[in-house]
Image 1 (tube, each protein chain N blue to C red):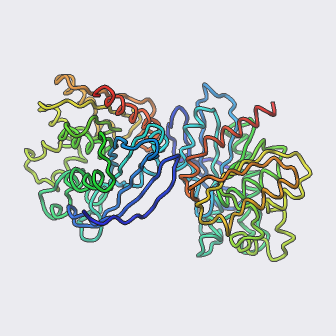
Image 2: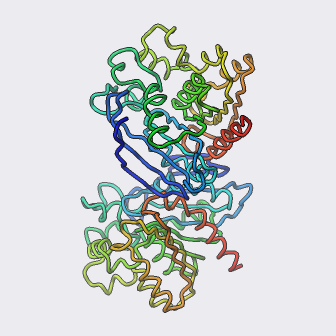
Image 3: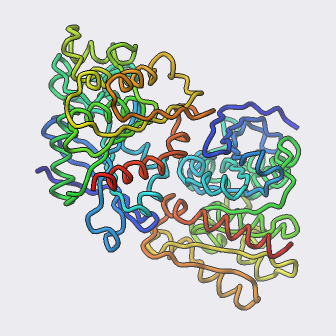
Length: 282
Length: 282
């Protein structure tokens, strides 16, 4: 396991917010991630929420702007926030905000120049998971959530690992990347033009063919979100869930947009949703 | 009154977060400020909290990072967040983070090159106040709070206007700028070397000679704040308050540092403090 360099440590409520840097073997570059731990005296083996951010974000956006530490401290939930892509001069990039650095899409790229670094799925599900479970001894139940591109990531990673994650939630997720501009652009570059290879990275395809354990999903979508109609289209996922009898709840939030203000408004309810599923399972 | 340009508008909880730009006549430059309004259906004439940020900040830092909208929405408090200095090419600047843009110190400069623009005291207490009271019809009770340099600003503006502000609170304020490096550097530049002219901008001097209405003050200070001993020294203010029988409470917060994580942790208690004083006064 790689060495962790502690970059920041702050008391917040009665928990602690950390930021670390490490050399990722999976991504072949230096990466940062953030971690919130609730008070150890009160919560000795807290459940762990994985939070995946959207296009252009780093691990800082949710950490700084969601105000989630208050609820996580009260409820006793640890939270880990990975960055959204490989970083640095070695990792390929583009001038576009929706391709390259800041736009990893939580997949394993197969096409060059991306395939040498862009393995965010393996990074999160294996390398960073080993750090969370090993170095930080976070061996409790796990949930996954995210926003926009990170909502896509949460859905794909959760649906592909239903034995590991108890539940999934998302804010304004890209539910069907194979069919919308952001996803088509990224998948063409990262995975090539054979759309057969896109299916394992598309939440709608995964839900359609799901034969495994059905873990509950909660989605919040603002009706004033400028990306709602063209890029997100959660109703398509709802229709598949209905047909498959999949436990998916989509809540339309009146007046809410695509910003972190929407995440701040509902993140406490997402944490409570995850804990409620856990209580049901026990 | 100058024209307001709406830059941002977001639903957050059941309130609305705005960001505006306007041409300030007082500062002779273009300025931004942020404003949170609680739900108008529930709170028709909310009290108004003025929030003053610290060195290097803009109106965005508190707005993005303090998570204050949740408590403000629940309690029905409007919040206005000014920028921390004049801005733009015309307004003088320095290469230092603690002088010039981002470091207005909430005073009226008398020395050039600063005096042409650096009139933050008049900007806040007159021009922006007229916008808050007139354009936004915020005519309820008013409180003032801030962080570090903004804690100094809140103390000075509050103590100089005790008939207007019901109460003052601060996080890690500079309580005696005339005697600490940040304040000496800024006051020498903005006010000149005659220290007699500094007294009206120094909270400790104001408290020492206070003969007017005594409005309550709450201060939170982290004991892991790296600026605590050299720049902040709240115990000096506490000693004067004791001698003057002034209603000042200083709370040392264990393990807390100078960051917005400390503000996030206690801002709800500050709002409740201000509302409690209001209830006492009614």
